[in-house]
Picture 1 (cartoon, rainbow, N blue to C red):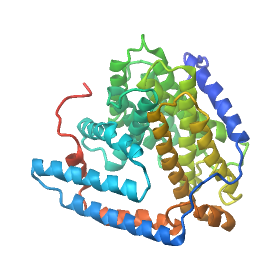
Picture 2 (cartoon, one colour):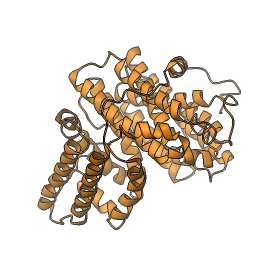
Picture 3 (cartoon, rainbow, N blue to C red):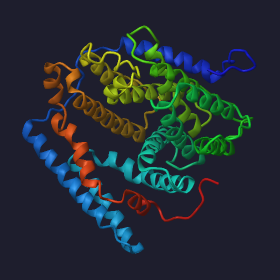
Picture 4 (cartoon, helix red, strand yellow):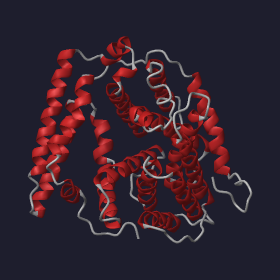
Amino acid sequence: MGKIKGEEKIKSNVSIIVEELKNKYLHIWYETKTSFPLLEKKYGFTEKIRKEREINKFTENLGDLLENMPEDQKKQDVWRTSISSLIGRFGLETLEFDEDLLDILFTDGYTEVTNLFIREARKFDSEINVFDIIQAIRNVWIMNSIQIFLGMDVEFSPSIFAYSMLYPYSDNYMDNPDFEMDGKKDFSERFEKRLLGESVNANNFIEECIFKLVGMIENQYPRVTYPQVYEALISIHNAQEKSLLQQKGRTSPYEKDVAGISFEKGGSSVLADGLLVNAMLDSEQEDFMFGYGVFLQLADDLQDIKEDYVNGHMTIFSQLANKWWLDGLTNRLFHFLNSILYSDVHFSTPRAKDLKKLIEISCSFLIFEAIAKNKSLYTRKYINKIHQHCMFRFSYMKRFKKKFMRRYSKIDINSIISALVCSTSDDIIN
């Protein structure tokens, strides 16, 4: 980790908050029960098969629409409406979303912001790949959800764009096992200097992009007026540096503070999201943002457990892979999600409550998907029990991604994305 003039880094107010919240949520995590979660609905075999047929039909119909994108601009408007209608029916009939939840996605501005983001991403970097855009959009949606929690309109902003774009570039570099650790450290130190406001010449295209993105944030949030924004960016950067420790080979529990590193990284990331949406969060809002980020980090770690294990990237899940069953730890993750969403009383408007329900459904599905992907890491008894509460068979979920990729492999995704974005030419970023 870098030093300033040979001295240890001075703790900022945000870094103190991060340390306090990390310790708080570590305590909550270890105190959270490991009993089987309260999952209300069960799905029988026949119902699962019916839903799988519905998702197969949806996948085919969506593929047909994407393959037959009209060239005429006016016809494209009808085409986009058909896609939205198809997705809406699928959400209502198969995924069992109610209309209030769909309203959040289709009438609260998410679609417009997504379209604007994609357009600006391609303007910023014409060579950016689809998967990096998708990775960035996930963070855009998190920042949009924070806007709803804070009672704001769902809107696009330079900081939402810049922060969401930063981490396809920097994360992919830092997490790539093929890159040497010394190179990662050098890159990290240069990135930190730029976050601190220093003038740094870019060494390569990635650094050039990253430094431009930091400049966009500076244009919206002047450093003198909003120092907490940059303290938050430094905090997540420090957490990223610490996460390099997780990439230094397999370790047993307690050799390294793997849980603390993961909690700090996840919590700091969404805390920064919150401060880039509204630079003046109160303590309860900061608390919620941090806890939400911790859960998202843990859910990602559960999804990636086998890849992390193979690459020697230690998380609380990959440390236990092939040594202990993950039944209780996964139960704890379900309970942890509910404690974050529903013990909070700060965000209690009808709109916020609907959003919490949407987050609960979406995040629970992420956990089910991770279980399906890693069945061998659970007892047969647990798989049989948890499987009853998933609307699809685990065997189907495990195969679906490959089936999906085959179906869409010949579709020109770049052209489709370009056609789906808004046609407005207003320059949002500059």
